[in-house]
Length: 370
Image 1 (cartoon, rainbow, N blue to C red):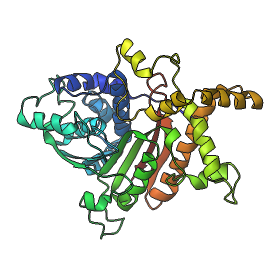
Image 2 (image 1 turned 180 degrees about the vertical axis):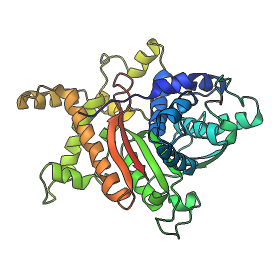
Image 3 (image 1 turned 90 degrees about the vertical axis):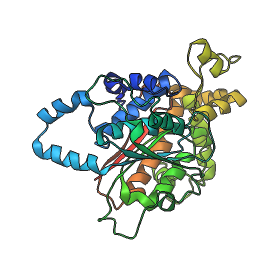
Image 4 (image 1 turned 30 degrees about the vertical axis):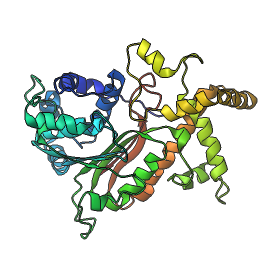
């Protein structure tokens, strides 16, 4: 099965929660903060961010000297965090702040087509002005250094953004000469947004040190933009190209059940969350998949009929999650065979980065380039 590895607790132990509170950052609630923490933890595990202060001495003691030198070179190269479909930009903000806490400075680039309130820019301005420049962390270094961030927001649809121009990247040199200084992140990149983001990264792929993307809203993916067509054709034995739009629409339709709400029919999910003391979803978290199910309650009945007729023991929700992972794995294959085809890739994979009780949309696409 697909492994689950939640790396958020080490981030909390290092001061993530304290730093968020001290910097007065609106993280969207504890569930969102745990997801951000795990994504940042995976960036560290991939050597795209410096090690945590609490673990640095132990790492240096246990690791071989030569491995440490290689890891240091990799970390020193990453000086830019690029968040795709950023929304308010909180995931990129934490990742870049953690990078700047070690290096003294970092660049944060946010790509988002629409305006939003409570943006990362406000938090960074507050830190630079000195009104909330310290996170009151008692460690040797603060968890985040927001005053050291140089931030740029690119307000453009992912379908149209040209990253070399927007990021002022010179593509004249060969890929072998390019410095891999960019780490790409995305949290709940909605529907076809993941596919559009992956396509938009291709012109700067030789500058990317690594990529972690949490997918979302599979029910609103579309065949025109989907990057994993070849994979689905192979897996369903449709080498003749007969696996197409209709089959994909069925797959994503069934996939909507993988994150279907389990609340009573009369009670909207946001109401239930507020009764439990949690904040409603932000920045796209499976809102579209839930909307599809609420708009057509017969969806579950229809898929349940399929499960029953085929004698599947997994149930409709597990079938939906399997469809989601098929869609996501097609994206992994694209990352491996197209996006980073010419790079020296040290592992492209998919795993669950939090438990499904934190969010049912818990798949993380990961790739590290040497």
